[in-house]
Image (cartoon, rainbow, N blue to C red; front, side, top):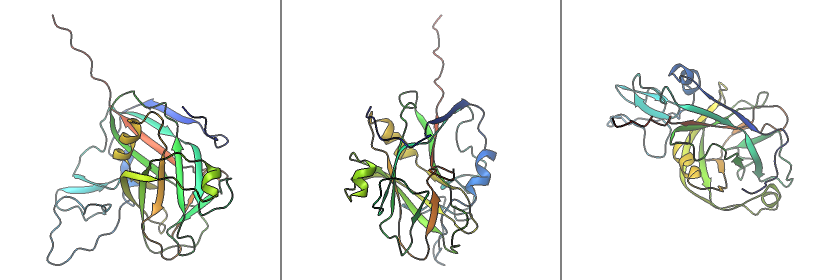
Length: 253
């Protein structure tokens, strides 16, 4: 594993196993999906369009929006016996900033910072344990900033080439590739941003020495959304990974 420039105080935040329920997601998921406009002649059956995050009640009859995903009503977001990892970044960089030292916040989707991108790498000690059931990227909006009445659609890309904070500060940006994930920041009312990055995490898990992810806004208008980086005020981005429990082997008698 490479020895990246670590953020002071960053570490593997925790690992524990417990029963996971829909209630764990309900408070966070209700504000995490994009608003869709339905045409009068269109009937939405089950899922939002490809490349869009869902928004209650846009999922259709018999479905509900949980953490960006249209799921059958009363479904469990993750298996009850899933093992949960919560990871903080071990490396962070901000495109559009000349200083390699991370700022306390990053603004995405604003007219003044159209090129802002947040690059993140996480500890990889969770890899090779078992299959991924689900994964989410958690982003914390900053308090005390200009309120934005509009939602800010976000993209989370898989980074395809090596990078460092110094290189990003010089304008040498890494490449991006699929899979990518779609999420939504709802600055008003302010709520934790929870993006379903299951496919992205599975791609990272297959790469022993991955290059992390990049978070960017899909468009730039208005004040955008200002997120905490964790370098001064807490609220660092977190990667939340749920792993399947291995099934016990059956002994033939």
